Length: 317
Ligand code: FUB
Image (cartoon, rainbow, N blue to C red):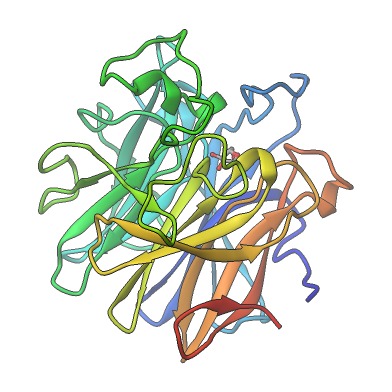
């Protein structure tokens, strides 16, 4: 398996791919050069706008629709436009994105457009009750919509364990339960949460929640949801062990049972992805830092086909 960057005129990362109106649209982060030194809080990921890309054929030409939302157009945000996602509902396109607010706390905002390629107009405030990073929006077959989110370390999820922000809180350690990603049902217009934010439980094959010290399997960041043959696939990055892994369940809000790895570590520290079906085949959009020869904050989006066994497990060729 070897693939090339989808685009090389700018650095891109965290690709969220969707098929809208018969075409593949990719909503990535737009990485940029910065003088900020690498640190565990991810300050070097100092992005200031989003581009949208689209293509009609995997491996074919990719259209850059330009900067569709800029930091200065988001009234509440101060910095760090990290991994976004998009959803279509009621004929409108919604871009969900994390950014730090004026007090340095990550929140999740939403911006709306009448076309999938933007530009998007940001709502004046972040989604009430939102926190942390890496929103993933999922619209189920019955029209119910959900937002999954969370990321530890620089993504601040560990600061929200008691449902209020504690800047000193640390990621749990030891054999107790790992920190769990979060999800909330979205309102009909996708602009707010409809109900409580709840933890997403990921179990091992014995039905026990993954433990905090299970760094090869526990959730770190980069949630993604896709549905295939009625099965909900919740996939994510293990962060400091650099795997893309997945768990499956029969309800969009879990619980999910850990099933295995999708991708081994790539060049660069982060790994982040999306999975989408297009013209009868399934694709993994992901990134690595090969285009910048390994500079963590200068990444490039790639794509490869993935495959499913009869029992629903995922493999690569
Ligand atoms: O792009 C900034 C952050 O790096 C994302 O939010 C994480 O998922 C990681 O890819």
